[in-house]
Image 1 (cartoon, helix red, strand yellow):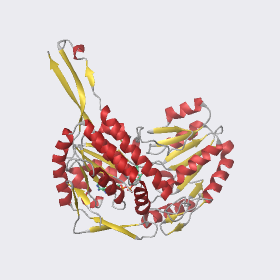
Image 2 (cartoon, rainbow, N blue to C red):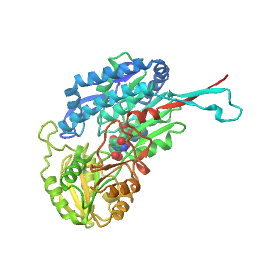
Image 3 (tube, rainbow, N blue to C red):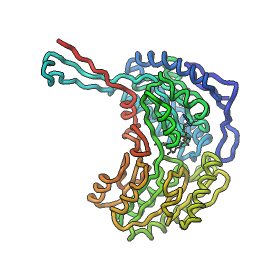
Image 4 (tube, helix red, strand yellow):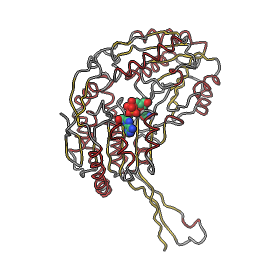
Amino acid sequence: MKRMLLNGRWVSSSETIEIRNPQDNSFIDTVPRATTEDMQAAIAAAVTGAQRAAQLPTHQRMTILRETAERIAKNFDRFAETIACEGIKTIREARKEVTRCIETIRLSAEEARHIHGETIAFDQMPGSENRQGYFSRMPIGIVAAITPFNDPLNLVAHKIGPAIAAGNAIIVKPHEATPLSALLLAEMVQQSEIPDGMLQVITGYGSEIGSTLTTDRRIRMVSFTGSPQTGETIIREAGFKKVSLELGSHCPVIVMNDADLTSAVDATLSGAFWAAGQNCVHVQRILVQDDIYDRFCEDFVTRTAAYRMGDKLDEGTDMGPLINEQLACQVERCVNEAVAEGATLLAGGQRQGNFYTPTVLADVPDSCHLAQNEMFGPVTLLYRFHTLEEAIDQANRLDYGLHAGVFTRDMGTAFKAIKQLHCGGVMINDSSDYRIDAMPFGGVKGSGLGREGVRYAMHEMTEPKVVCFNL
Ligand code: NAD
Protein backbone atom coordinates (compact mmCIF):
# COMPACT_ATOMS: atom_id res chain seq x y z
CA MET A 1 0.00 0.00 0.00
CA LYS A 2 1.39 3.39 -1.01
CA ARG A 3 1.01 6.37 1.29
CA MET A 4 0.48 10.04 0.49
CA LEU A 5 2.67 12.96 1.55
CA LEU A 6 1.02 15.23 4.10
CA ASN A 7 3.00 17.80 6.10
CA GLY A 8 6.34 16.05 5.61
CA ARG A 9 5.04 12.60 6.57
CA TRP A 10 3.93 9.62 4.51
CA VAL A 11 0.42 8.80 5.73
CA SER A 12 -2.24 6.21 4.97
CA SER A 13 -6.02 6.46 5.32
CA SER A 14 -8.85 4.14 6.27
CA GLU A 15 -10.19 3.99 2.72
CA THR A 16 -8.08 3.29 -0.34
CA ILE A 17 -8.23 3.47 -4.14
CA GLU A 18 -7.07 0.46 -6.15
CA ILE A 19 -4.66 1.27 -8.95
CA ARG A 20 -5.06 -1.11 -11.87
CA ASN A 21 -3.22 -1.57 -15.14
CA PRO A 22 -5.57 -0.29 -17.86
CA GLN A 23 -4.46 -2.93 -20.38
CA ASP A 24 -5.78 -5.94 -18.44
CA ASN A 25 -7.25 -4.52 -15.23
CA SER A 26 -4.56 -6.29 -13.17
CA PHE A 27 -4.01 -4.97 -9.64
CA ILE A 28 -0.89 -2.83 -9.07
CA ASP A 29 -1.22 -1.17 -5.67
CA THR A 30 -3.49 0.97 -3.51
CA VAL A 31 -3.25 4.64 -2.51
CA PRO A 32 -5.12 6.55 0.21
CA ARG A 33 -8.56 7.84 -0.68
CA ALA A 34 -8.10 11.22 0.97
CA THR A 35 -11.03 12.92 2.66
CA THR A 36 -11.90 16.61 2.78
CA GLU A 37 -10.41 16.61 6.34
CA ASP A 38 -7.10 15.32 4.91
CA MET A 39 -7.17 18.10 2.32
CA GLN A 40 -7.91 20.71 4.97
CA ALA A 41 -4.95 19.42 7.01
CA ALA A 42 -2.75 19.72 3.92
CA ILE A 43 -3.86 23.31 3.34
CA ALA A 44 -3.15 24.21 6.99
CA ALA A 45 0.32 22.64 6.69
CA ALA A 46 0.94 24.51 3.44
CA VAL A 47 0.37 27.85 5.19
CA THR A 48 3.48 27.20 7.32
CA GLY A 49 5.14 25.46 4.37
CA ALA A 50 4.76 28.59 2.23
CA GLN A 51 6.34 30.78 4.93
CA ARG A 52 9.30 28.42 5.17
CA ALA A 53 9.56 28.07 1.38
CA ALA A 54 9.73 31.85 0.95
CA GLN A 55 12.67 31.96 3.41
CA LEU A 56 14.74 29.35 1.51
CA PRO A 57 17.66 30.98 -0.28
CA THR A 58 17.91 30.47 -4.04
CA HIS A 59 20.91 28.12 -3.74
CA GLN A 60 18.93 25.77 -1.47
CA ARG A 61 15.98 25.66 -3.85
CA MET A 62 18.41 24.96 -6.70
CA THR A 63 20.05 22.17 -4.69
CA ILE A 64 16.70 20.48 -3.95
CA LEU A 65 15.87 20.49 -7.66
CA ARG A 66 19.31 19.43 -8.88
CA GLU A 67 19.42 16.52 -6.42
CA THR A 68 15.90 15.51 -7.43
CA ALA A 69 16.86 15.42 -11.12
CA GLU A 70 19.88 13.24 -10.28
CA ARG A 71 17.74 10.81 -8.27
CA ILE A 72 15.19 10.50 -11.08
CA ALA A 73 18.05 9.72 -13.49
CA LYS A 74 19.38 7.05 -11.10
CA ASN A 75 15.91 5.49 -10.85
CA PHE A 76 15.16 5.89 -14.57
CA ASP A 77 13.81 2.36 -15.17
CA ARG A 78 11.64 2.39 -12.04
CA PHE A 79 9.99 5.60 -13.24
CA ALA A 80 9.49 4.31 -16.79
CA GLU A 81 7.92 1.07 -15.56
CA THR A 82 5.63 2.94 -13.16
CA ILE A 83 4.34 5.17 -15.98
CA ALA A 84 3.92 2.22 -18.35
CA CYS A 85 2.09 0.09 -15.75
CA GLU A 86 -0.35 2.56 -14.22
CA GLY A 87 -0.89 4.64 -17.37
CA ILE A 88 -1.50 4.30 -21.07
CA LYS A 89 2.00 4.60 -22.47
CA THR A 90 4.19 1.91 -23.95
CA ILE A 91 7.57 1.45 -22.29
CA ARG A 92 9.25 3.34 -25.14
CA GLU A 93 6.86 6.28 -24.72
CA ALA A 94 7.29 6.13 -20.94
CA ARG A 95 11.10 6.40 -21.22
CA LYS A 96 10.70 9.59 -23.25
CA GLU A 97 8.49 11.02 -20.52
CA VAL A 98 11.12 10.26 -17.85
CA THR A 99 13.83 11.93 -19.97
CA ARG A 100 11.63 15.00 -20.32
CA CYS A 101 10.85 15.04 -16.60
CA ILE A 102 14.58 15.13 -15.76
CA GLU A 103 14.91 18.04 -18.19
CA THR A 104 11.94 19.86 -16.60
CA ILE A 105 13.40 19.57 -13.09
CA ARG A 106 16.91 20.56 -14.26
CA LEU A 107 15.47 23.58 -16.07
CA SER A 108 13.62 24.53 -12.89
CA ALA A 109 16.90 24.44 -10.95
CA GLU A 110 18.55 26.68 -13.54
CA GLU A 111 15.66 29.13 -13.79
CA ALA A 112 15.58 29.63 -10.01
CA ARG A 113 18.58 31.96 -10.33
CA HIS A 114 16.87 34.03 -13.04
CA ILE A 115 13.85 35.39 -11.19
CA HIS A 116 14.50 38.94 -12.30
CA GLY A 117 12.85 42.24 -11.59
CA GLU A 118 13.63 45.64 -13.16
CA THR A 119 14.66 49.07 -12.02
CA ILE A 120 11.95 51.68 -12.47
CA ALA A 121 12.52 55.26 -13.69
CA PHE A 122 10.37 56.96 -11.07
CA ASP A 123 11.67 60.35 -12.22
CA GLN A 124 9.52 60.09 -15.36
CA MET A 125 6.75 61.61 -13.21
CA PRO A 126 7.14 65.31 -12.34
CA GLY A 127 7.54 65.51 -8.58
CA SER A 128 9.28 62.12 -8.38
CA GLU A 129 12.78 63.38 -9.29
CA ASN A 130 14.28 62.19 -5.99
CA ARG A 131 12.81 58.73 -6.06
CA GLN A 132 14.60 55.54 -7.08
CA GLY A 133 13.45 51.98 -7.01
CA TYR A 134 12.77 48.64 -8.62
CA PHE A 135 10.45 45.65 -8.56
CA SER A 136 11.30 42.05 -7.78
CA ARG A 137 9.17 38.95 -8.17
CA MET A 138 7.92 37.31 -4.96
CA PRO A 139 6.53 33.79 -4.45
CA ILE A 140 2.75 33.72 -4.83
CA GLY A 141 2.24 31.51 -1.73
CA ILE A 142 0.35 28.21 -1.93
CA VAL A 143 -0.16 26.62 -5.36
CA ALA A 144 -2.81 23.91 -5.85
CA ALA A 145 -1.77 21.61 -8.69
CA ILE A 146 -4.35 19.30 -10.27
CA THR A 147 -3.09 16.95 -12.97
CA PRO A 148 -4.48 14.51 -15.58
CA PHE A 149 -3.70 10.85 -16.28
CA ASN A 150 -1.96 11.01 -19.65
CA ASP A 151 1.51 12.32 -18.65
CA PRO A 152 1.43 11.27 -14.99
CA LEU A 153 5.04 12.28 -14.31
CA ASN A 154 6.13 15.19 -16.49
CA LEU A 155 2.93 17.22 -16.10
CA VAL A 156 3.37 16.95 -12.32
CA ALA A 157 7.03 17.99 -12.72
CA HIS A 158 5.85 21.03 -14.70
CA LYS A 159 4.05 22.21 -11.57
CA ILE A 160 6.36 21.01 -8.77
CA GLY A 161 9.59 22.23 -10.45
CA PRO A 162 8.53 25.87 -11.05
CA ALA A 163 6.71 26.06 -7.69
CA ILE A 164 9.84 25.03 -5.74
CA ALA A 165 12.10 27.16 -7.94
CA ALA A 166 9.94 30.21 -7.19
CA GLY A 167 9.82 29.55 -3.42
CA ASN A 168 6.20 28.46 -3.09
CA ALA A 169 4.39 25.69 -1.24
CA ILE A 170 2.52 23.28 -3.51
CA ILE A 171 -0.23 20.72 -2.94
CA VAL A 172 -0.51 18.20 -5.80
CA LYS A 173 -3.74 16.29 -6.44
CA PRO A 174 -2.77 13.75 -9.13
CA HIS A 175 -5.32 11.89 -11.23
CA GLU A 176 -6.97 9.07 -9.27
CA ALA A 177 -6.05 6.48 -11.96
CA THR A 178 -2.33 7.37 -12.12
CA PRO A 179 -1.03 8.72 -8.77
CA LEU A 180 1.99 6.38 -8.45
CA SER A 181 4.33 8.39 -10.70
CA ALA A 182 3.56 11.59 -8.76
CA LEU A 183 4.19 9.82 -5.42
CA LEU A 184 7.51 8.45 -6.70
CA LEU A 185 8.54 11.94 -7.83
CA ALA A 186 7.63 13.34 -4.40
CA GLU A 187 9.72 10.56 -2.79
CA MET A 188 12.73 11.81 -4.79
CA VAL A 189 12.13 15.44 -3.74
CA GLN A 190 11.67 14.49 -0.06
CA GLN A 191 15.13 12.92 0.09
CA SER A 192 16.51 16.47 -0.06
CA GLU A 193 16.30 18.93 2.80
CA ILE A 194 12.91 20.48 2.16
CA PRO A 195 10.68 22.13 4.78
CA ASP A 196 7.57 20.21 5.89
CA GLY A 197 4.49 21.41 4.03
CA MET A 198 6.40 22.85 1.08
CA LEU A 199 5.48 19.85 -1.11
CA GLN A 200 2.45 17.67 -0.41
CA VAL A 201 0.80 15.04 -2.60
CA ILE A 202 -2.78 14.20 -1.67
CA THR A 203 -4.35 11.23 -3.48
CA GLY A 204 -8.08 10.95 -4.00
CA TYR A 205 -11.00 11.60 -6.30
CA GLY A 206 -11.27 15.06 -7.83
CA SER A 207 -15.04 14.95 -7.35
CA GLU A 208 -14.60 14.33 -3.58
CA ILE A 209 -11.66 16.53 -2.54
CA GLY A 210 -11.05 18.83 -5.53
CA SER A 211 -13.29 21.71 -4.51
CA THR A 212 -11.97 21.73 -0.91
CA LEU A 213 -8.62 22.56 -2.46
CA THR A 214 -9.68 24.93 -5.23
CA THR A 215 -12.16 27.04 -3.22
CA ASP A 216 -9.98 27.65 -0.14
CA ARG A 217 -9.12 31.32 0.18
CA ARG A 218 -5.58 30.51 1.41
CA ILE A 219 -4.71 28.92 -1.94
CA ARG A 220 -3.30 31.75 -4.07
CA MET A 221 -3.18 29.92 -7.40
CA VAL A 222 -4.79 26.85 -8.95
CA SER A 223 -2.66 25.33 -11.69
CA PHE A 224 -4.92 22.88 -13.52
CA THR A 225 -4.22 20.54 -16.42
CA GLY A 226 -7.14 18.44 -17.59
CA SER A 227 -10.42 18.44 -19.43
CA PRO A 228 -12.32 21.60 -20.43
CA GLN A 229 -15.32 20.42 -18.38
CA THR A 230 -13.33 20.19 -15.13
CA GLY A 231 -11.51 23.41 -16.00
CA GLU A 232 -14.84 25.25 -16.27
CA THR A 233 -15.99 23.89 -12.91
CA ILE A 234 -12.74 24.99 -11.29
CA ILE A 235 -12.77 28.52 -12.69
CA ARG A 236 -16.39 28.98 -11.62
CA GLU A 237 -15.71 27.73 -8.08
CA ALA A 238 -12.21 29.06 -7.42
CA GLY A 239 -13.20 32.61 -6.51
CA PHE A 240 -10.59 35.17 -5.63
CA LYS A 241 -7.33 33.59 -6.80
CA LYS A 242 -5.22 33.11 -9.87
CA VAL A 243 -6.22 30.15 -12.08
CA SER A 244 -4.15 28.72 -14.91
CA LEU A 245 -5.84 26.20 -17.18
CA GLU A 246 -4.13 23.81 -19.59
CA LEU A 247 -7.08 22.20 -21.34
CA GLY A 248 -7.89 20.12 -24.39
CA SER A 249 -7.78 20.77 -28.09
CA HIS A 250 -8.68 19.51 -31.58
CA CYS A 251 -5.31 20.18 -33.20
CA PRO A 252 -5.12 20.69 -36.97
CA VAL A 253 -2.11 20.04 -39.21
CA ILE A 254 -2.13 21.63 -42.68
CA VAL A 255 -0.15 19.84 -45.41
CA MET A 256 0.45 22.00 -48.50
CA ASN A 257 1.11 20.68 -52.05
CA ASP A 258 4.81 21.65 -51.75
CA ALA A 259 5.36 19.77 -48.46
CA ASP A 260 7.92 17.02 -47.96
CA LEU A 261 5.40 14.19 -48.04
CA THR A 262 7.51 11.62 -46.20
CA SER A 263 8.24 13.83 -43.23
CA ALA A 264 4.62 15.05 -43.14
CA VAL A 265 3.36 11.44 -42.96
CA ASP A 266 5.98 10.45 -40.35
CA ALA A 267 5.25 13.37 -38.06
CA THR A 268 1.45 13.36 -38.31
CA LEU A 269 1.31 9.59 -37.78
CA SER A 270 3.26 9.86 -34.55
CA GLY A 271 1.24 12.94 -33.52
CA ALA A 272 -2.04 11.10 -34.16
CA PHE A 273 -1.29 7.90 -32.27
CA TRP A 274 1.26 8.85 -29.56
CA ALA A 275 -0.09 7.64 -26.20
CA ALA A 276 -3.03 6.18 -28.16
CA GLY A 277 -4.15 9.73 -28.96
CA GLN A 278 -4.45 10.61 -25.25
CA ASN A 279 -2.40 13.73 -25.68
CA CYS A 280 -3.58 17.34 -25.55
CA VAL A 281 -1.61 18.19 -28.72
CA HIS A 282 -2.84 15.05 -30.50
CA VAL A 283 -3.31 15.49 -34.28
CA GLN A 284 -7.06 15.22 -34.61
CA ARG A 285 -7.40 16.83 -38.05
CA ILE A 286 -5.06 16.60 -41.04
CA LEU A 287 -5.93 19.05 -43.82
CA VAL A 288 -4.23 18.07 -47.08
CA GLN A 289 -4.10 20.18 -50.25
CA ASP A 290 -5.80 18.51 -53.20
CA ASP A 291 -2.80 17.70 -55.47
CA ILE A 292 -1.18 15.44 -52.85
CA TYR A 293 -4.30 14.33 -50.97
CA ASP A 294 -4.53 10.86 -52.56
CA ARG A 295 -0.83 10.05 -52.08
CA PHE A 296 -0.86 11.33 -48.50
CA CYS A 297 -3.97 9.27 -47.69
CA GLU A 298 -2.51 6.10 -49.15
CA ASP A 299 0.79 6.39 -47.25
CA PHE A 300 -0.88 7.46 -44.00
CA VAL A 301 -3.44 4.67 -44.04
CA THR A 302 -0.87 1.99 -44.97
CA ARG A 303 1.39 3.09 -42.12
CA THR A 304 -1.56 3.25 -39.69
CA ALA A 305 -2.58 -0.31 -40.51
CA ALA A 306 0.98 -1.49 -39.64
CA TYR A 307 0.80 -0.08 -36.08
CA ARG A 308 1.30 -2.75 -33.38
CA MET A 309 -1.10 -2.49 -30.47
CA GLY A 310 -0.53 -4.63 -27.38
CA ASP A 311 1.39 -5.20 -24.14
CA LYS A 312 2.87 -1.88 -23.03
CA LEU A 313 6.02 -3.48 -21.64
CA ASP A 314 6.82 -5.24 -24.93
CA GLU A 315 9.58 -3.28 -26.74
CA GLY A 316 7.90 -3.92 -30.09
CA THR A 317 4.54 -2.38 -29.13
CA ASP A 318 3.68 0.92 -30.82
CA MET A 319 0.47 1.76 -29.00
CA GLY A 320 -1.17 0.93 -25.66
CA PRO A 321 -4.76 1.07 -24.37
CA LEU A 322 -7.19 3.80 -23.40
CA ILE A 323 -7.21 4.67 -19.70
CA ASN A 324 -10.49 2.82 -19.05
CA GLU A 325 -13.36 1.05 -20.74
CA GLN A 326 -15.57 4.12 -20.49
CA LEU A 327 -13.18 6.12 -22.68
CA ALA A 328 -12.70 3.17 -25.09
CA CYS A 329 -16.49 2.88 -25.46
CA GLN A 330 -16.81 6.63 -25.99
CA VAL A 331 -14.27 6.46 -28.84
CA GLU A 332 -16.17 3.50 -30.33
CA ARG A 333 -19.51 5.32 -30.09
CA CYS A 334 -18.18 8.49 -31.73
CA VAL A 335 -16.51 6.63 -34.61
CA ASN A 336 -19.67 4.55 -35.21
CA GLU A 337 -21.79 7.71 -35.16
CA ALA A 338 -19.51 9.38 -37.74
CA VAL A 339 -19.65 6.33 -40.03
CA ALA A 340 -23.44 6.15 -39.69
CA GLU A 341 -23.63 9.81 -40.71
CA GLY A 342 -21.58 9.27 -43.88
CA ALA A 343 -17.88 9.30 -42.89
CA THR A 344 -15.51 6.91 -44.67
CA LEU A 345 -13.57 4.55 -42.41
CA LEU A 346 -10.06 4.21 -43.94
CA ALA A 347 -8.37 2.30 -41.09
CA GLY A 348 -9.13 0.93 -37.62
CA GLY A 349 -12.56 1.25 -36.08
CA GLN A 350 -12.31 -1.77 -33.75
CA ARG A 351 -12.49 -1.91 -29.96
CA GLN A 352 -10.90 -4.80 -28.04
CA GLY A 353 -11.55 -4.24 -24.32
CA ASN A 354 -9.78 -1.02 -23.37
CA PHE A 355 -7.84 -0.97 -26.66
CA TYR A 356 -9.02 0.81 -29.79
CA THR A 357 -7.27 0.32 -33.12
CA PRO A 358 -5.62 3.40 -34.68
CA THR A 359 -8.37 4.91 -36.76
CA VAL A 360 -8.48 7.19 -39.81
CA LEU A 361 -11.69 8.73 -41.11
CA ALA A 362 -12.42 10.91 -44.14
CA ASP A 363 -15.54 12.84 -45.22
CA VAL A 364 -16.66 13.36 -41.62
CA PRO A 365 -19.72 15.66 -41.58
CA ASP A 366 -19.22 18.81 -39.47
CA SER A 367 -22.29 17.88 -37.44
CA CYS A 368 -20.56 14.81 -35.90
CA HIS A 369 -19.28 14.83 -32.33
CA LEU A 370 -15.79 13.92 -33.59
CA ALA A 371 -15.67 16.92 -35.91
CA GLN A 372 -16.66 19.35 -33.15
CA ASN A 373 -15.09 18.01 -29.96
CA GLU A 374 -11.76 16.77 -28.69
CA MET A 375 -11.39 13.00 -28.98
CA PHE A 376 -8.90 11.77 -26.39
CA GLY A 377 -8.17 8.61 -28.36
CA PRO A 378 -6.42 7.22 -31.47
CA VAL A 379 -8.65 8.80 -34.10
CA THR A 380 -7.68 11.28 -36.78
CA LEU A 381 -9.79 12.92 -39.48
CA LEU A 382 -8.59 13.69 -43.01
CA TYR A 383 -9.84 16.73 -44.96
CA ARG A 384 -9.10 17.84 -48.52
CA PHE A 385 -8.70 21.56 -49.29
CA HIS A 386 -7.94 23.76 -52.28
CA THR A 387 -6.61 27.09 -50.96
CA LEU A 388 -4.67 28.04 -47.82
CA GLU A 389 -7.54 30.36 -46.82
CA GLU A 390 -9.94 27.39 -46.81
CA ALA A 391 -7.54 25.39 -44.64
CA ILE A 392 -7.11 28.26 -42.16
CA ASP A 393 -10.88 28.75 -41.90
CA GLN A 394 -11.31 25.03 -41.25
CA ALA A 395 -8.47 25.04 -38.68
CA ASN A 396 -9.91 28.06 -36.83
CA ARG A 397 -13.56 27.02 -36.87
CA LEU A 398 -13.63 25.42 -33.40
CA ASP A 399 -13.44 26.92 -29.91
CA TYR A 400 -10.03 25.31 -29.31
CA GLY A 401 -6.56 26.71 -29.98
CA LEU A 402 -3.60 24.87 -28.49
CA HIS A 403 -1.17 23.96 -31.28
CA ALA A 404 -1.27 23.67 -35.08
CA GLY A 405 1.20 22.27 -37.60
CA VAL A 406 1.92 23.42 -41.17
CA PHE A 407 3.97 21.50 -43.73
CA THR A 408 5.26 23.72 -46.55
CA ARG A 409 8.52 24.76 -48.21
CA ASP A 410 7.22 28.26 -48.92
CA MET A 411 8.12 31.00 -46.40
CA GLY A 412 5.24 33.22 -47.50
CA THR A 413 2.72 30.44 -46.86
CA ALA A 414 4.32 29.68 -43.49
CA PHE A 415 4.16 33.30 -42.30
CA LYS A 416 0.60 33.75 -43.51
CA ALA A 417 -0.48 30.66 -41.60
CA ILE A 418 1.45 31.74 -38.47
CA LYS A 419 -0.34 35.09 -38.50
CA GLN A 420 -3.82 33.74 -39.14
CA LEU A 421 -4.02 30.56 -37.09
CA HIS A 422 -5.70 31.11 -33.71
CA CYS A 423 -3.63 29.04 -31.31
CA GLY A 424 -0.83 29.05 -28.72
CA GLY A 425 1.83 27.54 -31.02
CA VAL A 426 2.39 26.93 -34.75
CA MET A 427 4.89 24.22 -35.70
CA ILE A 428 6.26 24.65 -39.23
CA ASN A 429 7.22 21.32 -40.80
CA ASP A 430 6.28 19.48 -37.61
CA SER A 431 3.09 18.06 -36.26
CA SER A 432 1.04 19.84 -33.60
CA ASP A 433 2.50 17.59 -30.91
CA TYR A 434 6.04 18.99 -31.15
CA ARG A 435 7.08 20.52 -27.82
CA ILE A 436 10.11 21.14 -25.64
CA ASP A 437 9.81 21.77 -21.91
CA ALA A 438 11.53 25.18 -22.02
CA MET A 439 9.07 26.89 -24.37
CA PRO A 440 5.89 28.74 -23.41
CA PHE A 441 3.12 26.17 -23.66
CA GLY A 442 -0.60 26.78 -23.55
CA GLY A 443 -3.67 27.61 -25.55
CA VAL A 444 -6.07 30.34 -26.60
CA LYS A 445 -9.90 30.24 -26.74
CA GLY A 446 -11.30 27.10 -25.05
CA SER A 447 -7.84 25.50 -24.77
CA GLY A 448 -6.82 27.42 -21.70
CA LEU A 449 -5.50 30.39 -19.79
CA GLY A 450 -1.88 31.12 -18.87
CA ARG A 451 1.30 29.35 -19.93
CA GLU A 452 3.48 26.50 -18.68
CA GLY A 453 7.07 25.77 -19.74
CA VAL A 454 9.30 26.23 -16.72
CA ARG A 455 10.16 29.94 -16.93
CA TYR A 456 6.61 30.90 -17.93
CA ALA A 457 5.03 28.85 -15.15
CA MET A 458 7.40 30.56 -12.68
CA HIS A 459 6.18 33.89 -13.97
CA GLU A 460 2.59 32.82 -13.24
CA MET A 461 3.63 31.56 -9.79
CA THR A 462 5.26 34.84 -8.71
CA GLU A 463 3.97 38.38 -8.17
CA PRO A 464 5.85 41.67 -8.62
CA LYS A 465 6.60 43.74 -5.51
CA VAL A 466 7.55 47.38 -6.10
CA VAL A 467 10.13 49.12 -3.91
CA CYS A 468 10.58 52.89 -4.01
CA PHE A 469 13.16 54.98 -2.07
CA ASN A 470 12.30 58.65 -1.48
CA LEU A 471 15.80 60.07 -1.21
P1 NAD B 1 -10.02 15.38 -15.99
O1 NAD B 1 -10.50 16.78 -16.07
O2 NAD B 1 -11.01 14.29 -15.95
O3 NAD B 1 -9.11 15.19 -14.68
C1 NAD B 1 -8.02 16.02 -14.42
C2 NAD B 1 -7.86 16.18 -12.92
O4 NAD B 1 -8.95 16.93 -12.39
C3 NAD B 1 -7.82 14.87 -12.14
O5 NAD B 1 -6.80 14.93 -11.16
C4 NAD B 1 -9.17 14.83 -11.48
O6 NAD B 1 -9.20 14.10 -10.28
C5 NAD B 1 -9.41 16.30 -11.20
N1 NAD B 1 -10.80 16.69 -10.97
C6 NAD B 1 -11.93 16.12 -11.44
N2 NAD B 1 -13.01 16.80 -11.00
C7 NAD B 1 -12.55 17.83 -10.25
C8 NAD B 1 -13.19 18.89 -9.53
N3 NAD B 1 -14.50 19.03 -9.50
N4 NAD B 1 -12.40 19.77 -8.87
C9 NAD B 1 -11.06 19.65 -8.90
N5 NAD B 1 -10.41 18.66 -9.55
C10 NAD B 1 -11.16 17.76 -10.22
O7 NAD B 1 -9.01 15.21 -17.20
P2 NAD B 1 -8.26 13.88 -17.70
O8 NAD B 1 -9.26 12.96 -18.31
O9 NAD B 1 -7.35 13.37 -16.66
O10 NAD B 1 -7.33 14.48 -18.83
C11 NAD B 1 -7.70 14.60 -20.16
C12 NAD B 1 -7.86 16.05 -20.54
O11 NAD B 1 -6.72 16.81 -20.15
C13 NAD B 1 -7.97 16.23 -22.05
O12 NAD B 1 -8.98 17.18 -22.33
C14 NAD B 1 -6.60 16.78 -22.43
O13 NAD B 1 -6.58 17.52 -23.63
C15 NAD B 1 -6.27 17.61 -21.24
N6 NAD B 1 -4.82 17.84 -21.14
C16 NAD B 1 -4.35 19.08 -21.41
C17 NAD B 1 -2.97 19.30 -21.38
C18 NAD B 1 -2.41 20.66 -21.66
O14 NAD B 1 -1.25 20.90 -21.30
N7 NAD B 1 -3.15 21.57 -22.30
C19 NAD B 1 -2.11 18.25 -21.08
C20 NAD B 1 -2.65 17.00 -20.82
C21 NAD B 1 -4.01 16.80 -20.86
